[in-house]
Amino acid sequence: MTLHIDLQAIVANWSALAAKAPGARASAVVKADAYGLGAARVAAALYEAGARDFFVALASEGRALRPHLPRDARINVLSGHIEGADLTGLVPVLNSSEQFFRDRAMRPGKPFAIQLDTGMNRLGLEAGEWSAIRAEALAAKPDFIMSHLACADEPGHPANASQLAAFRAMTEGCDVPLSLSATGGILLGPDYHFDLIRPGVGLYGGLPFADAQPVVRLSLPVIQTRTVQAGEFVGYSATWTADSPRRIATVAAGYADGILRSISSKGARLYAARTACPIVGRVSMDLITVDVTGLADIPAELDLICPAQPVDRVADYAGTIGYEILTSLGRRYDRTWR
Ligand SMILES: *Cc1c(COP(=O)(O)O)cnc(C)c1O
Image (cartoon, rainbow, N blue to C red):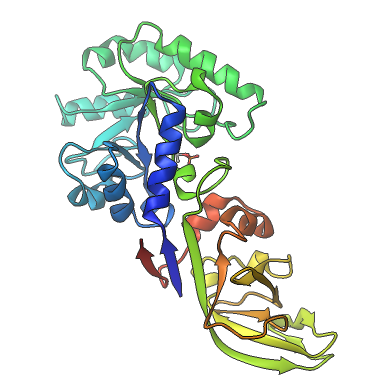
């Protein structure tokens, strides 16, 4: 079971997104182990390409990443300053006045950033809370002030313009770098770029960055093949029955590896180069069964994620989004970085 990760493609996607916002610094979001692809390797490759700003969700992720990046790399922690977190060498993005006062009391003079809520109602200071601490926060010189868009993957959604207006109003007169956009916001155009962009999923080849280079190939070894006769079933609960003699291959991976059981019977395929082989029956914990009748030769491995079936296609079959497929990719794969 091999998860091939193309670091050059990640760097190319980062550069392509950076080029869309020429006036802004491009950071890289590497939370959740770089969406499952290996934060240490991904961040080091992007540092090499010029990235100096990184985002993780948790202080523990930042602590794990810190030794892999030179000192001039800034690792920002989106959850901010949670009580008891070890933020040595990290930059918390403070999300409430409570976090602000805790952080300033415990880390006076240390770098921090501020997140404002502009309508998503998930993380960040709301307008009233911000007004109350704004003067004190600005006097302490935050590295940047950011907010996050709820609907940036839908360019026509009215929340984009209203969050943009709210962000402008709340940051008016702040002489501090500003950041609003993740991948989707970058694609909304220059109004949304400000000083620092925060691409995540687009680096890893996922939508909404439709022009991304493919990053992931997931190759699964064939363990066994057999012929089933018309009328025989395959797999748990006998959900699939052969209507003619079929050649069935069993590959070593399953829902324990993040291949969601919900893709069963939805039309997902495994690929032998360009040839599609339908998954038949239920995805089980460690195994998947595939109809390879159409193949002249059975290869040693079949691919689930590949250019012919990108991560977002797999996500469609599962009824989810590419982000969830990537971050579900299991620990049992051999990850190889090229
Ligand atoms: C995850 C996240 C990002 C990156 O989002 P993508 O859609 O993956 O580009 C940026 N900013 C914040 C606050 C996030 O939580």
